[in-house]
Image (cartoon, rainbow, N blue to C red; front, top):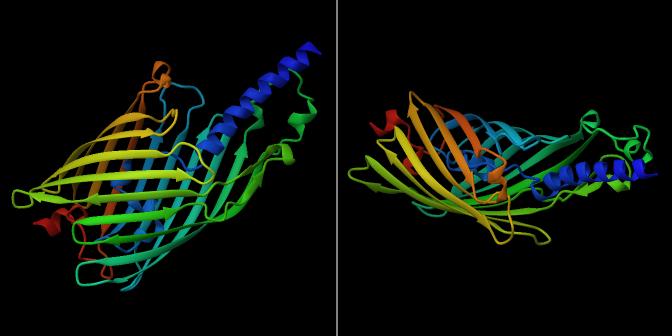
Length: 322
């Protein structure tokens, strides 16, 4: 009996850890949204001066066993004068849990006046959640509770958003997981509900010295349906001659958060390619056990005759800047 109780405590601890990542961090965290805000809002599709293909990878809490790791691939651009489309594939692991999603974005944009435009976007998505049972070690392999745990489940949901923008600024509001569908890894004991998120983001470009330098302050606020800590980021990015950039971010929340951090990011852009790196230095107790978080991305911007040419200075390619 004692061994069984110990086994159940270990199992509950493992499952609680995975449930924490699934519930509190259903949307994987990343720091490079300043360079790929399509991941924040499907309405971004078609609003840039070029079409953009991107891959990125994030290793959160380096050296911490079972910490989240995320990989993302995306492409988005204009399909016609008013319609934008995009595709994003995301894979995220944390401990024994794994989440893979595919979303297809559709956006429609139009002018409010000569300088201000608005775009509405929807992105149906398929999400697969899974748990690797072989990564959970039990005292009693025949435990009935553990045997009721199923390895995989797949559900559908929807992301939605709107973005209002001008030549030097962007204001974005999006709602991931609108439908709040439920998924289940076994019986009702392992049932979880996707939570609707609310993400508000804004950025403004300030060109300096004949537009060779561009200073871009921005901010993000993220809230979760049903309460919980509200995350907020404040960022500042400096770009030189549309070739190099560097910046700082501060991320925190209204409650205790493992994700409170200062972020340093740098990047370079040449021949329509852009590469960036970000390092998160955490302020929570997690810093005693990890070497920070690392994130890299690679973008390629390619010509798009239907893309929105009147956009922010930061979206202009080096060739266009010259």
